[in-house]
Each structure stands twice: as C-alpha cells, then as structure tokens.
Length: 293
Image (cartoon, rainbow, N blue to C red; front, side):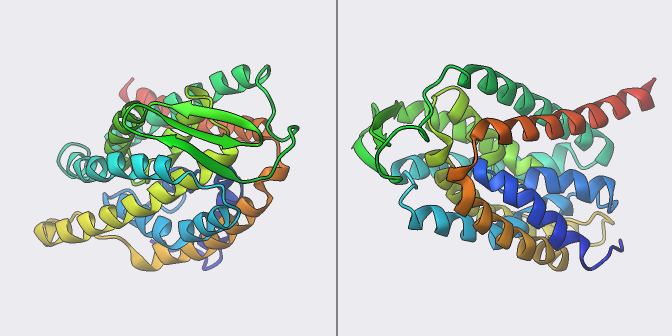
C-alpha cells in the first residue's frame, strides 16, 4: 500500500473539521477512504481507525470541556455501554467478517441506517426550538442524574433522557463500532439528537469522549489478537504509521471544528453528512449486488 504523504493528514483534517461539530470523530468516513482509495481492506483497517481516534479526539474533547459543554453523566453512560460492546464487535469482525467484500456490505448497511436517521432528524428539527437563538450562557449544567433520569440545562432550557435507554443504545452501538473500527459516536450522536432531542451543542463532547475511551479498548484488542494470526496472511494489528498520519490531521480538524461549532447551524452539517453517507452506502451495497448478479 502506497500513498502520498499529504493525503492522510489533509483528508483527516477536512473530514474531522465538519464531523466533529456533530460529535463524530470522522473515522466512519476514513474507513471507506482507506478501503476504496488506498486498497486497505484487511481487518487491520478497523484497528487503524481506532489509532486515528486515539490521536485526534482528545483535541475535540478538550475544546468542548473548556467551553463547559460536556455532559459528564451522559459521557459516563456512553462509555459504560460502548466499552464492552466494542470488544465483542472486535470478535465479530475477526471471526465473521474477515472478507472485505462482505465487510463492505456491512459498512454500507450501517451507513444507510445512519443516513436515514439523519434525514428524519433534519425533518424534525424544522419546527424544533433553536438553542442558538435563545439567550443564556454557552455552557451546560447537570440538574439531576440517577438511574431513572438525566436532566441538564442548556441556554435556559432543560433537556432529559433515560439513563437505561442510553446505556442499552451505547451497548449496541459499541458492538457495531467494534466491527466497523469506529468509537460509535457516528451512530449514537445522531440517535441522541434525533430520538432524545438533545442539542448537538451538548451531545458532541460526550460522544467524542466515549469514542476516545472505547478506542483505547479497540486498539488493545486488535494488537493482542494479532499475535494469534501471525503467519495466517491476514493483517490484524493496526498500521501505526497510517493511523498516526490520519490522527495528526484529525487533531487539528477536530479542535477547529469544536471551536466554531456553535456558530454553524446543525441542520446544514447534517444535510452534508447525510449526502455523503447515502452516497457511500449506495456505492458499497450496490457494488456488491452488481458483483452477485
């Protein structure tokens, strides 16, 4: 596998700048780039995505935390659910989806589901209150947190969700994220915004923090599992050079994206992401069906 030295960091910077505004690291878009452009299709591509997350996401988390827009109880729930899920997903990737052709179909279906959720959220947000237009400080404050409900305040309005529901969702997302090589924020962030109607301005920091923690587990799992696949001809361990190269660009992109997020209407970002996601999904699933027919 060969590529220009500038392609990984530049691509990661552009992708992460936009996706970080929605609480997404951008790994879900870097994986198709690696598979389709770089020809990197072994299970190691999932592990490499986790390396990218380790390097890139701390910058975004730091910026959201500095602006006091991280809902720490929400972040705790996301981490508690996705952490065991991502390890289980790693086993599924190695044992059930090692073939690149079948893995692309799986990726396409995940992206299709995510795109549908984004479109539904865009439609719903037309009549939803706009937190940018309201007065008040730009920081979030936890009002109540127990096993029955989580309540927090942002821009003079209270938001609530059920911790048990968020935990179960995070567990399922962690499983998918472990297979896909993402921390899971690409799936859980749109879900929290669309279903629980939480503002993206407060969800982003929590989901990026969840991505960071679960990515540690993901890298550790694939690095450990690589010892059992030596001599098999299948690459499992992360490509550290490529992952770090993506991470450097992603770090700068996430920091800047988190910094300017509150000045950009979330609807515009969701429309852009939905267009990209649907295009990739149709490409992967359609290509598989053509090859079968």
